Length: 51
Image (cartoon, rainbow, N blue to C red; front, top):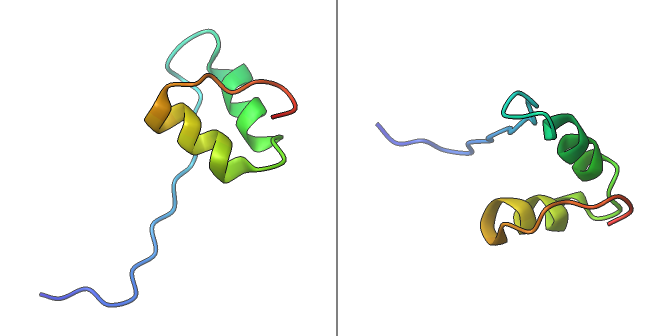
């Protein structure tokens, strides 16, 4: 089977720890959400307010 034109949606679900809500909020409220998300997931840089 061959997939054509696949779209994947990723959602933040803050359940991993006490700081999950804050991290999720900082990503959603960032000016450049994609960069902040990638920094967190790939480079392990914690998202900060106003990023």
